[in-house]
Image (cartoon, rainbow, N blue to C red):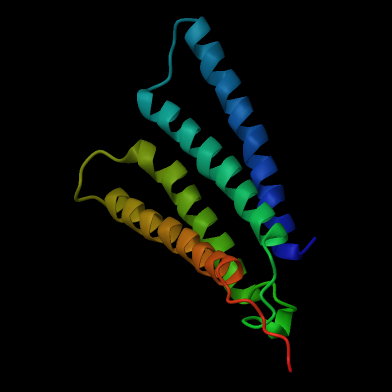
Length: 147
């Protein structure tokens, strides 16, 4: 399995565990009559969806999508390693910025608002770079045999 695939999947597994631990804490707090603020529940969902599901899906996709040797000959058809790493770091840096910044967001014209804007741009950039690679691998014209 390629390194970037393992990186995405290992990160997804870490978020899966953290999401379930956070969910247990939220449930425990509610059971003792001290529910967490609504934004914590939103962050819990975002960590589970983007942190676990999206990371895992991208990791498996990088691993299993068909190779495009015509487009990426230097990597035997897989993907440009640097761009794949950019997708990982952008997605996960944006996610962490959101998870740690959003609970402190109180007004549109604060430093936290800027952090959330950068977070959104990073997450979109991470998914867009993955989508570009995936598109190149899935919608490649068939290789024609030499006659």
